[in-house]
Amino acid sequence: MSILSEFLHQAAPKDGWGTAFVTAGLGAFVGGWVASRSFTKRAVVAELNALSTALALCFSISNKFIALKLQHVASMKQRFHQVKREHEEFMRRPMQARGRFVFQADFQTLSPMLVPIDELKKTVFEKTSIRGRGLVALVDLASSIEGLSEAMESRTELAHEIRNRSNKTDEDVAALYFGIRMQNGHIDERYSTNVDAIYRQTDDCIFFSRILAYELVQYGNSLRRRHMWRYWLGLPKMRDADWSKAQAEGALPDHAEYERWLSGFRALGRWEKIKATFVP
Image (cartoon, rainbow, N blue to C red; front, side, top):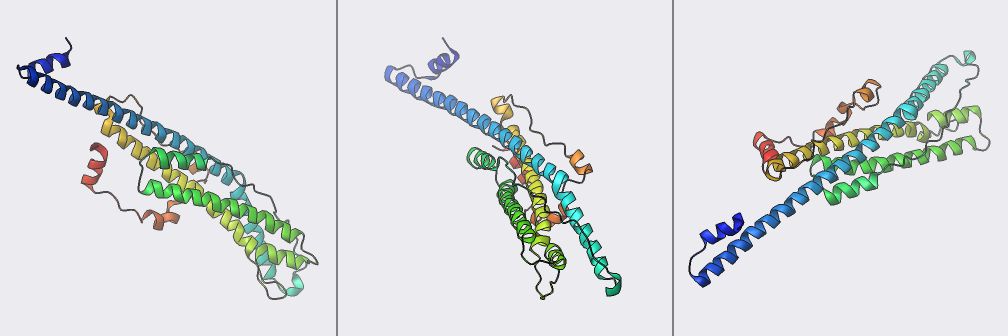
């Protein structure tokens, strides 16, 4: 006789109908409890696996934009502003001492990044219950990726427009490139602002993907702690990436630039932290 059967036999009344009724009731209760426990464990394990998948996708996106910044965007911005400063110094010289300003315009094409943002959104929105700062970071990450792609496409269009402008002079090219006043008094800053926009939006993609990765780790480990002893979960802790190399290379944006965004989220109180960590 099993332990459950023996328990039900001892706990039930000794009269016939009463015994059958109580035995059936207790059996249904215990069976339902076991089934509910098994279902909850599967749900927790499934969410933890989804969080691990989301974290891997997030790291992939972060690394792609860090590589983009180090290989192309940072040097593009540096070259542009260096030449722009040289042109400003040239324009401050007396007219008779200027001569001709010669520079190499940088019209390098940047192709929009192909990153698994749709897979990341589907995983986080549909398979996890993360809330708060992590969810907002995901929304802002998706928006930043879209904005960066649009800025890259605009750069290509502007470069084509400047190169193929009819009846252009050297002064016209410099004015369009640097965003300074043209001979007709018009100022077109589209190209110069586009360079800075690409740099800022690349930083945004790095920042929001790192914030999301951090929040995924915190939420995943909190979920694991709440259920590991109850269900004997055999899953390892989630760990954030080591960003020290990227930090040393100057690839990570300064969090001070995002102080307003970061300050929009209220810090949890002591009891709220304990409840989030240990209470299912």
